[in-house]
Length: 237
Image (cartoon, rainbow, N blue to C red; front, side, top):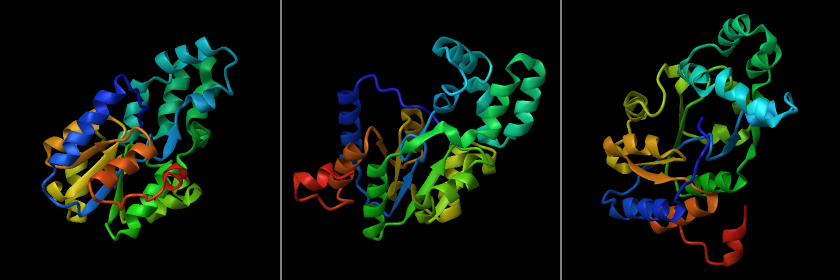
C-alpha cells in the first residue's frame, strides 16, 4: 500500500474530472483501492512507538525496512521469513525488524469513515463494488476481521495472494477476468496515479482519490451517486 503525495492538487482534480466526464460507457462496476482510500496505512504509526528519534526512524525505514525490502511482501513473500533473513543481517535492529511482522496492525492509523460512507452509498445504488489492493497475504485476513466494511465488497483481489501487484497490468486483468468485468464499464478508484495510468491503458475508467469528499463529488458528477441536496449532507463523515 502506498502513501499519497500530492504535488499539484488542482491540476490533478481537473485531470480527474476531465477523465470522468469523457467516459462514454455507463459504469457497471466500481473497484476501490484499500490503503490510502479507506485505511491509513503507514509504518510510521508503528515505528514512532519504537524510536524516540524521528531521524533515526526515518533512516531505518529508508535503509533497513525499506520500501524496496517491503515490496516483495505485496507479491506473496512471507513477512516472517523476510524479517528473519533481515534480522540475521542486522541483529542490532532485530526488535524493530521483527515488529514489521508481529505488529503489522499497528501500522493502521485509522479508517476514513467518509470513504466507508461513499462505499455504502455506491452499494445502495445496486452497482457491484470490488476491491483491488496491494497487501500482504497474511495481513488481509486480520484486517477483514478487524474492519467489517471489508466484507461489503462483491469480490476482492489481494496482491499477496496473487503474486502480482499494482501497477503491474496482470493484476488488473486478473480482477477483470475473475469477476467478468468489462474495462470500459468499470471505474477504478485509487490514490496512486501510476496505478490509474495502467488501469486507463487497459480501458478502465479512473478516479484519483484525494479525499472522501472529493470522491463523492466526482461520483456525483459522473452520475454514479445522486447529488446530495444539502451542505450538511456533504459534511457528514
